[in-house]
Length: 375
Image (cartoon, rainbow, N blue to C red; front, side, top):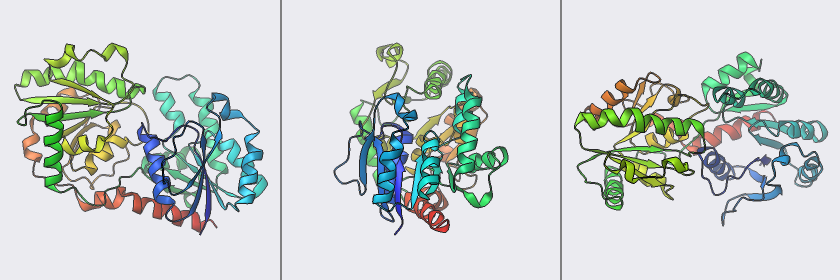
C-alpha cells in the first residue's frame, strides 16, 4: 500500500463548491486504496468517519500560501509516516511540494483542477501571466501531473512542454455508477415541486452554482435578463429554480421575479435531489476554466442539460448521447429553442459510457495506478 500526503490549500469540509466537493470525494474514494493523510486549514469541519486522517496544520490566514515554516512540519510527517507520494491540490503549494520532493525524495503529484492562470486571465486579472510562469515551473518539476480534462492536459503538454508519460486525465466524478431509476427521479420531482409550490405540469428548469464566483453570476444574469424574457414570450408553463450560496444582496429580492417564473431556493443541503427533479439543467456559462462540476452532476442524475460551449469543456463527445445539447457561446435564442424542443428528448437516456468515465471508483483507481507506476 502506497502512503500519500495530500495538501489542500483551502477549506473543503463541508463542501460548498464543486472544487471542494471534488477534493472531498476524491480523498474519500482514494482512501480505500491507499493510506492517506490530508493536511488542510483549521476551518475544515472534519466528518465523523472520513476514511483518512485530516491534519489541520495550515492557518486560515492568506499568508499561509507563502509560509516557509510549513516545510519543517510537513517534512516531519513525511519521514515519520514514511510517505511515498505527495499530492498538491492546485499549483499554489507547488513551491512547498518541490522543496519536500528535493529534500525527502517523495514523489510529487500536482492535481490541477483547471489551468489556473488561464482561468484568471478570463476573469480579467492583470497578473495572470506571472501565475502562468509559476504554474508552468511547478508542473515541470512534478513527477506526475493530474489534469481535470483532456483539453487542459493538451494545453499543458503543448505550452508547459510536459512529457506524456508524466500526465494523466483525472476528472471530476460522481458517486453513481449507473443511471437513477425512473421512480427515483419521479419521487424527487414530486418532493421539490411540493416544497416550492410548483405545479407538477410545469417544465422544471434548474440553475445552480456558488455565486461568489463571477462566471456563475454572469450565468445567472444571462438567465434573468436574456433567457427568461424569451421563455416568458413562449407561452410554455415552466419554472426556473435557482440554487446556490453567496447570492449578492442585489439579487435577494425574490418577489421581484416571482411573477416571472423565477424561484430562488438559496443554498440547499441536498442538491442531488434537485438534479434528479429537474427536467432541464441550464448551463449558460461563457467564461472561467476547468470542467463544470454541476453539469457532470446533472447529467449523472439522468437530467437533460443545455450548455454553452465553454460550459461543456471536459465532457467528452459521444458519452452523453442526446442528453447534452451544446450551444454556441452567447447564442441565447438557440438555447431557448432547445428548451422548447425538450419533448423530443424526454425519453432519451444517458449511455453507460458516461458512468464508466465519471464514476469516482473508476477515476481513483486510475489515479492510484498512475501513482504506482512512478514508484
